[in-house]
Length: 231
Image 1: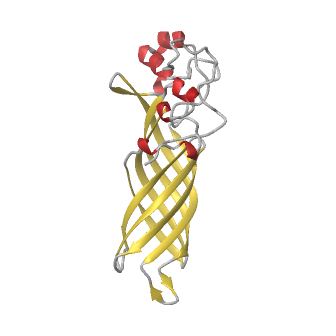
Image 2: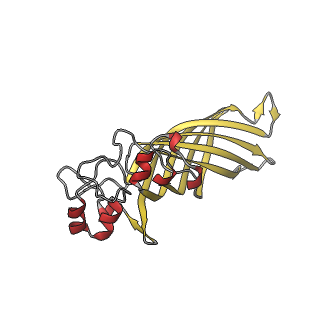
Image 3: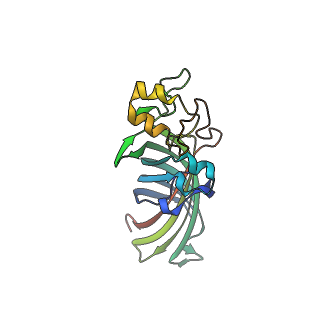
């Protein structure tokens, strides 16, 4: 499972985690099917993996635990039944949408803390800054390969990519809030996790902490096992 990222090129394999899912495929035409899945996953990121010195100096990191429900329309350019022959190989690709329920966290002194209640960018403290939602609607792409072991069982591998409409899967989007005010209102943990820059000086209120113009992306590989119902 890959990390969340602003750009797909920002992904870092070292942040990979495990994910687990299950679902139903319903084939309604020779080359078409619907795919409904539920997936439990965790993605992570750290500024120390970036080559960009500005990101490395920012020094933020996170992990996000999430549950995803997806609904996709899938097309098979190469499928099992070709010219009356029952083949073992099957390729597919599809588009759709997902709903992701997520909770970003960050580590401090060996303990992970949920970031949304802390309002690390001044949410709930500054006018016009409300807490971000706990869920996100995302567009979805899937492509995969299946191999039919016999008439009933199938194994395979698939790649899932998601483009989110949220910029807070990693709790980072806008600007720094006043760290002294955050410490007074929300405590030391909130202040320490909001600004972890390596310069030795607190970031000025209003200075850039993230990029609100670029929403988050995430993606994952799945090794799949399936069986045909009623076969």
